[in-house]
Image (tube, rainbow, N blue to C red):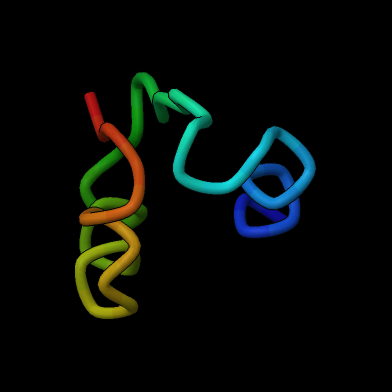
Length: 41
């Protein structure tokens, strides 16, 4: 879903932040290398 959001928002020009992610979500994002595509706070 976050990839679809990024695509809809304009790919690299989009400034999407994932805020208040718990530890499990952070691990999943890191494994999928999505932590490099989004700002994870």
